[in-house]
Image (tube, rainbow, N blue to C red; front, top):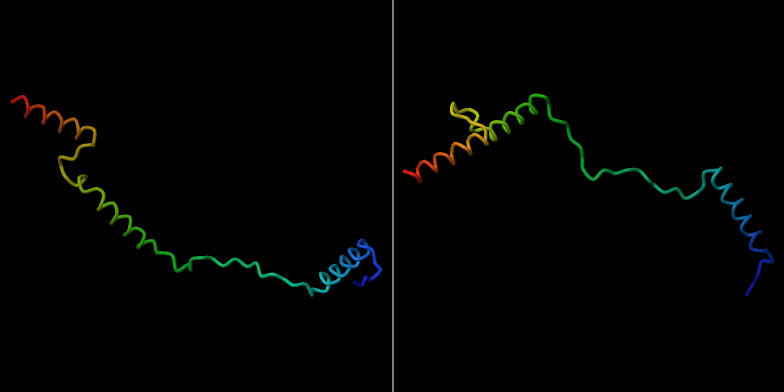
Length: 90
């Protein structure tokens, strides 16, 4: 077993000096830490495309709104139950 004859604190101080000189000269092993997104972003939709999507979703979800006999869900439920009771009592 060979020993260099230096104490651990001397080796640590030399290591620190060596690392310091590497840092100042730019010779350290740099790690690439750039962010790479998982999704590839494309062009955002235009305003007309966004409005068309909103209109399509609204049309799909609001079929009863276009009718003249439209009622809110609570009123519709009350009317349906009253009609069912009227049919049962007849």
